[in-house]
Structure formats: C-alpha cells, structure tokens
Amino acid sequence: MPQRTVMKQVALGMILALLALVLAACPAPAQPGAPASSGQEAAPAEASGPVEITVWAQANNVEHWRADGPAKAAEMVTDFEITVNPVNDDSGWGDYKKKFTLAADAGEAPDIVLSGHEDVPVWANAGYIIEFTECRESYPEFDDVIDSLWDSVTWQGKIWGVPQDTEARPMYYNKTKLAELGWSEEEINSLPERIKNGEFTLDDLIVTAKQAVDAGVVEPGYGYWHRPSKGGDFLQYYHAYGGRLYDAEADKLVVTQDALEQWYAFQRRVVEEGITPENFIGTEWSIWHSTVSAGEVLFWNGGIWQWADWATNYVADKGGQDFLFSFAGYALQPSGIPGRPGSTLSHPLVYMITSPQASGRNNQAAACALLAKTTTPEINTLHAVESTHLGILKSQADYPEYANDRLLSDTLYMLDYNFYQPNHVMYGPYFDILWDFMVRAENGELSPADAASQAVQQLQAELGDYLIVE
Image (cartoon, rainbow, N blue to C red; front, side):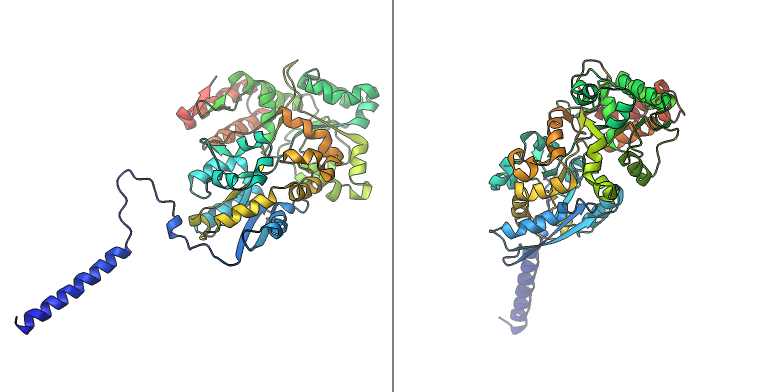
C-alpha cells in the first residue's frame, strides 16, 4: 500500500477516535415528552468528609433558634460530620423571600431554607426544593411530628418539608378593662369557653367594645385593634362567617360570596362603631405593639409568638410576662355565627431542603440527617418556649420544659380549632385580591357589598378555572 494512503487512513482513524471521545462526553439529547432533568446529575458529588450546611431563617431576636437550632442539633448527627452556618435574617418576610428566590435562581441558595408553608407549591414548582418523603421515611424522629401538621407541607399528594413551629392567633382581651366595665370574675374567666362554644360572637365583641368606649373605660378607637398590615390573620373573619378557601378534592381555590361580604362588613363596622381608628391600616408596628402590650386596648387580634416579643422588647421594665399575665387574657377568634365554635388560623413555618440546582451543592442527605436531629423535643422546645410558639411534636405535651410554660399549655387546645391557608400555586394572587378589596371596604372607599362583588369579579378574571365561586 503506498505510504501516502497509509498516512491518510491513520489520520482518519485518529479523527474518528477523537470524535468518539467527544460524543461520549456529551449527554444524550432528551426524548420528546421526557420529564425535565432534575439537575442533580450536574451537581458536585457529596463530600465524603466534613459537610457544611447553610441554614436560612427569617427571625427576630427571640426567634433565633430557627437557625441556631439546627446548629446545635449538628452535635447529635452521627452519620455525617456536619458543621452549620446559621443565618437568622431579621428583614421583613417580603425581602427575605426575594433574597432566597434570587439566590436559588443563581444556584447559590442555602442547603435548608425556612419559610411559610404556603411557599411549598411555588418553590416546588420552580424546582427550588426537593420532595421530602424519602427523608421523612429515613429517620424515626419525624414520626413524632403531630400528624395533622404534615398536611401543611403536602402539595399534589407529596410531602415537601417538615414543620418547624406552629402557632395560634388568639383574640386577646383586657381582663382589667372588662372588670372596669362591670364584668364579674366568672364572666371574664369563662370568656374563652363561651367563644369556643359560639356563645360570644363577633357581634358581641363589637357591642362590648362600644360599651367600653361609651363608658370611658377605653379611649375612642381603642375597643378593638386588628393587625395594622397585610396578613393572613384577616382570613379568620372570612372563616368566622362560614367562608371556604380551598376544595381539596378539586384542587381549586374557593370564594364564598355571602361570607366575603359579611367579612368586609365587619371590617367597616368596627370603624363606624368607633372601636377601631379610621385609616388604621398602615399604623406603625412599633406603635401597635407598645399600645396593646401596655394594656390600652380592650380586644386585639394577635399571635401567641408576639407574647415573647412584648415581654422582652416592650414591657420588660414592667415585669415582662408577669405584667402581661396580670391583665391579658386569650381565646379563640369569635365566630360570626351564633352557635358555631370559634377558630384560629395556624401558619406553620417549615424547613425545606433545596435542590442541587438551587444550592449548587449535593448536600441533601446530610441536610436530611440534620433536620431529623432538629425535630426533637430537646431542640424544638428551646424555640417554642423562648419565642412562645406552639410545639410541633406529640411528645412535647409531656416534655417538662414545654409543659411547664403557662401560655403554651393554656393555648395548646386551639390547635383543635385551627385551619391553614391553602397550598396552591395561585393562592398569592387570590389573597392579594381579597386583601385589596378588604382595605377599600374598611376605609369606606367601597361599600362591603360592592367590594365583595368586585373582588369576586376580579378573582374570576385572574384565576379562571382555578376558582370555585359559591
């Protein structure tokens, strides 16, 4: 064979071999209709040595165990060598969530993120977090979680996180002011039971608060204070009139027209009766906290976690919790319908494990092991007692440090009367619309009937088939 021909064949063979190596290094193209890649194969391999886990939590100074709890729990992990970088972020929830989504989009998210359970469907749908079922089944500690709380982290039949805390949102009342109004000790002490049984309703609250204003027991506008800013708490009054939020069987959001109008009418009535100030929404939180914790308001809607905040940051010089117990009582939110039990909204905060593409790391197994040791009475009770949040574990009711806490023990029954905001990808715009028209009704810009009618129309226009109107 001529030498030139041989050289051509050798060169051709080398080129073909090189092409084979290049093709072998390339992933096969996705087949039409195949599921999108999880991105896990592109993540770095999990380290066999020490693993650093970053935990993000939104927290103030009395809620620091949200991130510090996992850091302490790392000492109890035996199947991984873990160090924890805990980040407690005291910025507002909106800023905190924006930071997380920007970090996740950039592949720089923490390994574990704590947020409200309503973020589950949005973040799962975006690929930011991983399904939690395998993690739950891997460690017995998760069996201690109160069974109903798993519903708060369930979306499309799958579990996406583990609860970190839950709470109740009581109707607080001023026992001293009620006594000044002429209530007997028995009437004051029985108020939580009467609200629980539907014997003291929202109408009764308005009448009592107006009596207190008229008698000079409280200043005008100080009979009833709701929270001063946007929040799910207001849905308790929609629920109080029989409103439904979600149809689980149809996986659709629901708006109950009669209940919506009655809720909006309640928000306007408290202003017209002179028990809530005009244009109250937008009041500074510091003013709100200092006023209610000083005992200047007759009824106010708050959360049990605020008790620790008041005791530590507002009335510590007056005796802290002892001062609060001296005048403040707490009950379920009254129903708007006589004979219907009171209720409360619970809003569990949950730990979620981020995906490899969101975090840029493959630390999911180590993160799971860490959350198992975080989900124990020893760790969770540190947070529950210091921040006055309800525990999430069955065993905590008998755990001495938890059982001996007066507020937590007194309010534990409220979990039997609670409801959650729905886990639905369209819940954000749904609530935004309800809130916007509620504000217009309370401020007198629209009548309650017109506000409810226009809210329903906008819900139908924006949510379409995601909505049931009843």
